[in-house]
Image (tube, rainbow, N blue to C red; front, side, top):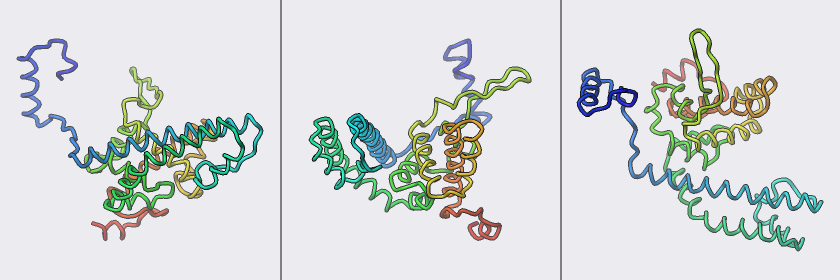
Length: 259
């Protein structure tokens, strides 16, 4: 009412606020406390360094490919084995290995704090029961989404994470466009990455089935987004019910016992 008003003055804005207060329609924004803000900063710093680490790994892999040197998949993720690459005597590889070593030293304290947060969070431990979600992803989702009750329904949560398309409508014509951009990009990235891992560990789950079905019709990228969307619904259910993940949907007796 205020931001879209063509007439802007303190008198008009005050009247609009008074009407919203009278109708009890003033929107409430969630303000995290200091502990959640600190945890979010730790998680975001770790995500930043993780993205940098992946870029360095890709650079090293490309250098090995250019030289025609075979390597084991995932070797750079294993600290002991990747040091064996120094025997190749390639300066570009040595520089990359040095960068990875410095990243490990810089992020050791962040990893320790994330592990401590995981042990202290019941919600994070529940989320780890979902295949494809590890300690870091679980703690990050808790930091960004909890308390889960601030989302009135799962559709609002999916919109917050940017896993729903934009909608353009004129009259009776409706068109769905690209994914929302005004969303929590960290949550979206975490869920897209976790959906890949989930599909490796749970080949018969609903997430895997939906992702494969959409991928056959619309491509791998959109299939993975569809899988992330379904995975977010599972995350919402786990946090809302306060129970670990189960491949089968809980029956009425389980829900009544929880209530």
